[in-house]
Amino acid sequence: MLIAIYSLVILAATTLGAFVGLGGGVIIKPVLDFIGAEPRMQVDFLSAVAVFTMSIVSTAKQIRNKVSFEKNIILFIAAGSIAGGFLGSLCMDSLSAVADQRIVRCIQAFALAILLTAVSIYVAKDRKSFHIKNNFAILLVGLSLGFIASFLGIGGGPINVAVLTLFFSMNVKESAVYSVAIIFFSQLSKLITIFASSGIQPYAHQWKTLIFILPMAVLGGFIGSKFNRKFDDKLIRKIFVAVMILLIILNIYNGIFQLLSIQ
Image (cartoon, rainbow, N blue to C red; front, side, top):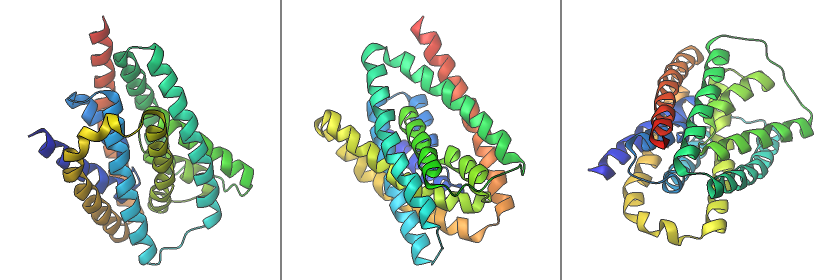
């Protein structure tokens, strides 16, 4: 029963992830925390694997459909996000070593709720944007994105979309495509960090779950990228903001629940 629920969550999250650039981790993480059947490390692992799989499928489909990318933006943000991903994982491991798991989840939930609120306010309206071209500045943007995504245990999608819209003058539809491509690199670095720090043994028992959720992530990446090409920026923006509002509410609930459980 639990695996069936996980599979549905992964399918919905990765479809929306590829469709509007959310990645999926920003949905998977709080929903699995809400279910509460797995410790934080296991949730982070399942989320990273599902989102990484989705990003491969979605990006490959966009390339096959001859969607053009500004390679400079992808490469420098990706390089920065990989480094930021390692730093974010190290900081989270350090925090987890000295703090109770419930405190860590509480911090993640409230921090994510605040970030998503800021993202929603920005994306909801067409606001002033820039178009940075300095490679070092792009690298720093990637570093920040990678750190936030890894520390919070999410793919970083909604933050990617907001940042790409703000700093590179993209609309939400364009940002979604770039976001998923960047997520590929950030989640790759996260998985490498996970296995380098703890090995594969703590996650070996998850193979049964992975058998079910990986096909869902593949299907979600395929459907989501198809929807992204089919629908216009206006609709994608509305769906993005609506999902953000739901996630803000869920994260606030998770944060309060974890806070009350500490006392």
